[in-house]
Image (cartoon, rainbow, N blue to C red; front, side, top):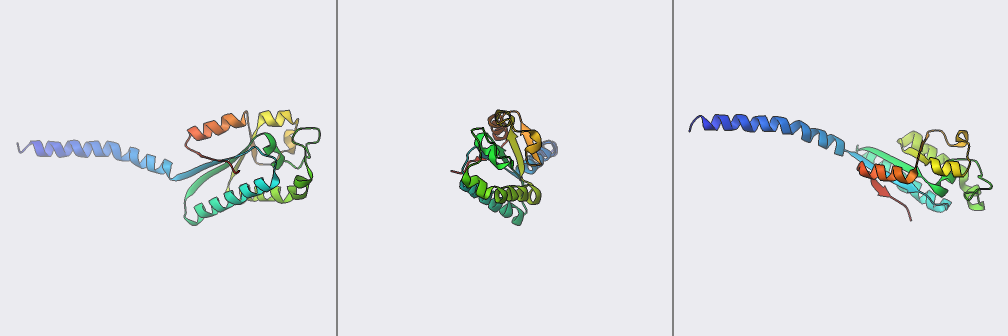
Length: 165
């Protein structure tokens, strides 16, 4: 009987040695706050609200020293917010409301990208439908083959999905 206890302790220590590194890796992976915003609408006021929400979120993460990966995926009418091109002759053409606010909104997007590391991704299907030259897209915007597929991929990777109404 006396030899069973030491062997049992050895088995327990061996199991904990194998399990502990996996849990540490899981904790590290979970430590990154992952959020994707879906921008597929034309309304500049709604987009402005979304930018304010993102700014508040990343400020909170920074103040609480949390790592984060926040992204915006632009689909359909969202293309209006990653170019200065008026997109005339397309369904996404600039209207009076956007013309008035475009510079301010683009500056805020650039600020989120440059200051807070927010990643920007544009649906290539939308870009092609708008016949927008890739050179006219805001720098730092990654092009993805399909915006909705990208949203699904990110959700499968554990990203929280947010869409401002």
